[in-house]
Length: 488
Image (tube, rainbow, N blue to C red):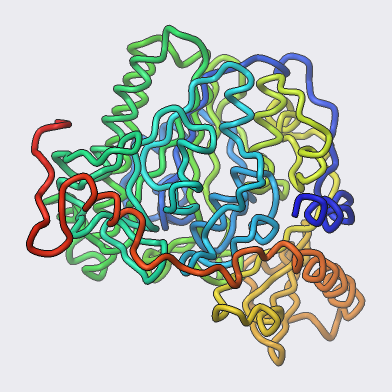
């Protein structure tokens, strides 16, 4: 399997894996790293990006203090983004073409980010959403995380046939969370629970060497169940679902403020890289404000993949600086490799499609050769990958984007002059469309041997439910509720 992956990735070196020399001042610095990635919040779901309704004062402050990658892209949906971030390559090379039906499982032969960080002496923790496989072999504690505090599936309470499902009857308030393999009863709203647990863990680690905290709340993913009263400022100004969505984001903002205050209190700001991003385009907010973009979550348009990317390292990185070049989630792992001084094995590095962002973090005007970024929504029916090539996909470089909605609807957009993707210029620039289409076809052929989950056989019972019943009894009338008060 590994040889197949290396062989098919070879041609992609020219597309993404151009490793520019990094400024010496950032190499091997080994900062603490806290990466916050919210769920279904888009680029336009922030006041600092022009949203006229939503209030996000703490994220606005982080925006002012950060290097901001303003053309930063991820995958169109959540599990694909998470796998690409963990591996430095497109999710299809990880076998991930969906968010359910075993096609969200991150292939087991992949070396992933926390494993690399542990080799550099980092303690690693995840708090929130994993969504890269609920079966035991795929769980984060088997893949480099020391501290694991997660829900199952793609969301709290979510259940699908097969392996993807959360603990039975779970909800956003007082959720049951799996901590280091054991379920615990928590008290409070889910986002508060995840941030509070992360802050406690950071407090226990901050004097013991570098740490990596991966904070992945399930909010503001549906169901739109917000903290009581958090939607009040938005009622009557936007449709009720958006008001609840904004209430969930306002709660995220409050927790960001709490985290930033703790970093100041602990005097960690100068040796901690704090990153805020989201996992795909907005799921709910585009009907109110979408920063001029077309599309949203689950689409191949810019609005489906462009997300916030704020990088703050007080005293080391410049503050309030925009970096407008085309960057993406593939770039995070190579960046962390340089910042931590890790020397990856050549066969692992050969699988990357990302580039280190270190040159841009040091100098926002650094040379950044043009590149190709491919997005594909996937989600074809199980076993029907062959029919999925020309459905909901896009391929772009710094200026042009070819969007393939279906075999009969293919459009070319000039992003320099039409960032909202309103005017199809295929007839004016057929040579550009042909070049991008050829790159896409080569990419599609390359990923085929790596679609390792397409015919996976599902387990009879969701692994999280099975583990829950094993711990507490059940299922059915014999089920015992978890004991209260294990966490505040």
